[in-house]
Image (cartoon, rainbow, N blue to C red; front, side, top):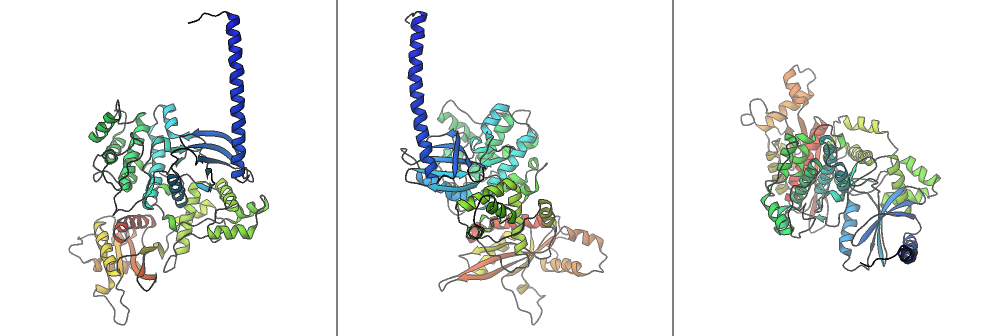
Length: 558
């Protein structure tokens, strides 16, 4: 080492400062020029404020929507970067446009240019769950439960809409200002079918399921269940269950499926984690079983306990007050805005409208709103029209909406417009009968019963079904299903009935009808619609039955 005098050290230090100052000045100038290019590409609609994160191919900026002043996050990807997976980004945008859930990051718009791709989404101010857990050390079970309830609800919504994430990890779970989670980064996501195996290995090694490490073919959802189990372990324990000195050692540990559970983890949480981290995917819990686990039930919010919605059935919320605000305060044309919302167009006006709507109502309220509007519009209709679409609706107070959702309706339709594309109605009814039998639901077909009345039209593709929360007295093997259903329906309509025990049992039973009807088609084939209609009984168990039945029928009829 060369020993220098204080004057020499001071002179060298001054020289280094001059060089660093020139370098930083040049870097700031380049960044300013690049920002100006981004602003032009974004049409001057956003002002970039600061960088929230950087990756191999992208950087995420905190930005502000100029006309409304609402903060957003903008993911900027440079297409000129070597190895930039454009197809992966396009898939991410397609999936984000499909999914609308309170705990999945909301996409506002995507802008593609010759040099960059801009993904404008809601801003999660509090950053990654990974950093939050690292700072806290580990989370109390009540806090971990609240986060996990949200996460599995979002994952179940994805699976219900035939999307598997395949890269769930704490770095891809973001927190907003109120510590509500948002699932992000759908670059490895995939539309899947239960009848078709996936083969691509992807995701982070520490969170990847054993079948991915083995490079075996797999069905998507169990992969996400495994990753969720890793995340839950990480939140409760402050570390990950599997590690190794190198990748080969990590892979061996994951394939063995052996990990240590700290003594401070409660028995219920331990049971849930162990049921999710089972090496064989066919023995692993599915997402519906995870959501129903007893550890997750305390303090669960109503919208998190409800069955997930079909994304294609969710409609754009058109709120009169939000439209008025967009028109009077921000200068948008009313008729063009309403038409764009009706048509599902993504433009400056609809982006501003959705930003304002998101400021007025949180994501959970908007999700519940779409659920209620779907059922309210379907009430009394024989067939529910599928697809997006808008339609205006006056704003309703959340308390009023919740009261309406809790009220029972004599004729409530669900899963209307469930398309049956390939099977004939007779074959479809066989699939339905098998699924009902596996769910323990009694059913009979009016066309096959002895109760058919002369002069009335027979419904060959219709079933009347009943579900009882406890075993039926006397057993269903002794009494025919048709007799049981007719007896209980008769009790419903007989106002003078004094059989209190029967009525008490009836109050918890769910009665509904299933019917397959011909829809639109062409000369080569006819499309069919599967409709479910609640006759009587509590609403939430009925929705749960609908969800389970839809999950079981998808592999069979799609």
